[in-house]
Image (cartoon, rainbow, N blue to C red; front, side, top):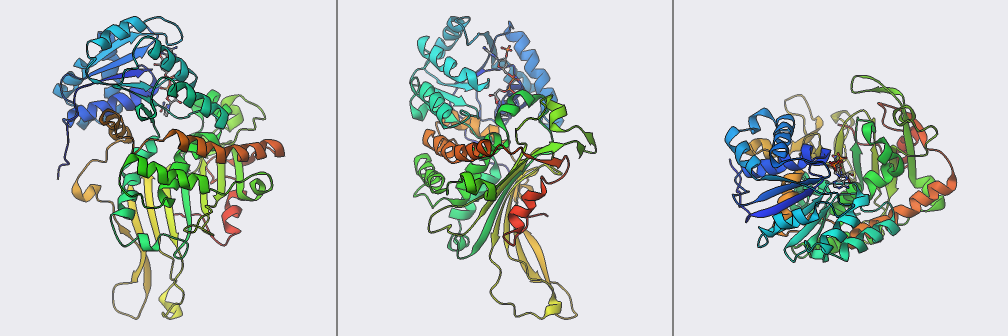
Length: 490
Ligand code: NAP
């Protein structure tokens, strides 16, 4: 089966940081795939911007190398690659000075009637400057959209400052705050499962759901991101954006349409209903950890301090939280959230754990009856599984078995699951903000996160150590087991 591809009108995509890791690893391969599928047609241009002096030919050669490195061999086709490279240009601009802006303006002037997107694939400290200078050089036209990468700020105050600065040049409907988790098929499937079926919604509340778990686990350590990471930590790097966005999609009320405004309004209500965690609560509802040397990815690995060279760092590489949503639908349904580096598996998943049956009619020797679970896996492979009880097939008395009903149809339909960036990059051109974060969402998320961070700072206690390759400090297991529950494992 093939999927429907609707071509987009020709556009100019300007990637600030067009020679960086994100551009080479994700953005350029994603745009190539959209061209190969026929969604990008002639007349579009992709303009890489960076400080280094580089001709268009050199930029094309760099991109070819990146495509060879990051595409599967069966995705690379000579004629599509040639067509893609023809779209590429490079302009040398130092966004912190006036160098190069006039050249960029002259190039873009040639396509002034097209939709224009500025993708800011540079450090967040440059967002304000790029927007300001783009405005000063007349580049922020009504047809221009700007994409900003996370993190938007490092707390409420700094997020407001970034939002003010970007917002003083671009209107809110021109600003696309990207969280690539929202571009994942499974995340969008969550909305279809909930709102395209009658089966789930009547059960989607505290009467039938016992609790929810959201896990984003990585096997890697901080690696070369140590400098950035030591200022951020897992709470800011993962929970404030990816995990809270997933929580919102699980917990939101049905919006009245699939309109960006309607969905974002409902997500915002969830963020505002999150029960604050501060001081005394932080002790009981949060666990933070930092990995020590151990084993991961099949070999011995160093601890966080040795990897970053920062002795006695108070930065958490693991966090587990018990969150609660104060509204009718979710009263007394805990949302257990956890994320960390150097964990035993690379897995991102949402687990909706339904309540146990009220009474079993089966004999004791039939086997244990487990509560139903809906598992939405985002990584490493996208999958949706509904765990149910069935009769163990065959003769010989009544025995029951807990099995997953597999609802991952990509394989059955023989459709490649697109990379999240493929969808999101072209949503920007289409002007569709459904899967991007609105300013008030980002700020509401920080409003909930900041008191946790402040409570940790006030306590002065260091993060709890955990061995690389384990599931975090034992306190994270105690956090959920105290409530008579366990973390989900396949
Ligand atoms: P990177 O590899 O360090 O690349 C930075 C890019 O910005 C380079 O192309 C660099 O080229 C350019 N640049 C730096 N200063 C500049 C200036 N003053 N004027 C013009 N260009 C400048 O960084 P990255 O990993 O791609 O990350 C970029 C952003 O995306 C960061 O905000 C990061 O947090 C975010 N992000 C990255 C990833 C990822 O997978 N890498 C994932 C999610 C979010 P020159 O040195 O030639 O100027």
